[in-house]
Picture 1 (cartoon, rainbow, N blue to C red):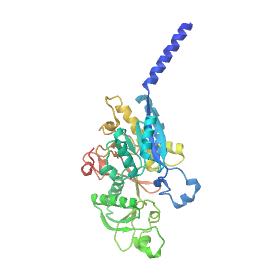
Picture 2: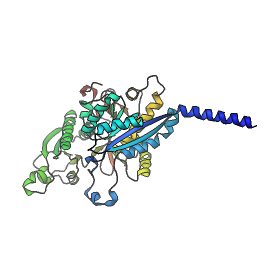
Picture 3: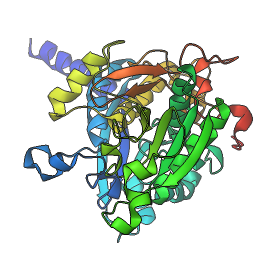
Picture 4: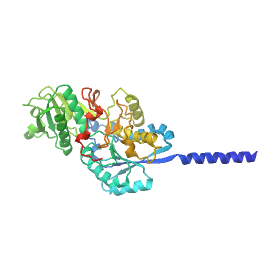
Length: 396
């Protein structure tokens, strides 16, 4: 009897050992910045800034954590256990060297970056030689998808051009074709306004004037800080406001001298995600996020969530293929993802941008979804928003 028990014990051990060898340990490195001005209460209402109850962490790492929970059912199919290892750096550190050191020491298989555009570009270029897939979940700059493309850098957050194209489609569809553009003092404000002007040109809108505003109460600068002066003496159907800080644009809706729709940084805003969307399983996704983090899901959260989901989906669908790698898997025409917001998402082969619908919403409700039905594309209607292949300078 003892001999039988002994052999059964050995057999059980061998089976356990075999099973453990079949499970791959997969490590995802998530890197962000301590002093990231994009999260210094940008876009937060002035009352919320003063309120201690609203001082919550709004970084997309929360979306990545939900993604790890949501892909647990994939682990058995992929024979892979996914781990998220997060690391936050300061500007004083040599971030490139620190990330390389962290990748080496932790056997990182995949990289997720939540960094400002220029910093992300420099680090991605430096890491390109490692041939590890990199996912951008927060930098919207157009140049990352048009001029400075990197073969292993993918983007789940929509580009500025996708967002401004969505607004331009909506205005064109409503036949509100005369647009006044108001631009803030920041470099980011100028870049966003330039993106919208390109979108307006593509969708047949007319820019009636472009005016600059200042955040100032100086009476000598009334033409730059007074809404009546800024929106007077010109005809327009809509006002596009480019205000990254959103300190000025808050007071613009219903305050223009002419009755007009306000779009851009306030009024009707283009977003990757909004908590009020009620279709395609969105309430269920948002509910899981809110229960985990006790706040509402935002666009960057969604981008980080689907970045993690894409890793598991690719491993399940193509992991058994010979010479599997994520770069080829992501741009495979058969690779699609359910983003819980309508048509299936997929990566554009030419610039690694995730195709996706865009939610056009007020603060409290999704008004419309872009691309609108009246805009069609010869291959994929989602390519009516963003930089199309024929206009891209990427050589991927």
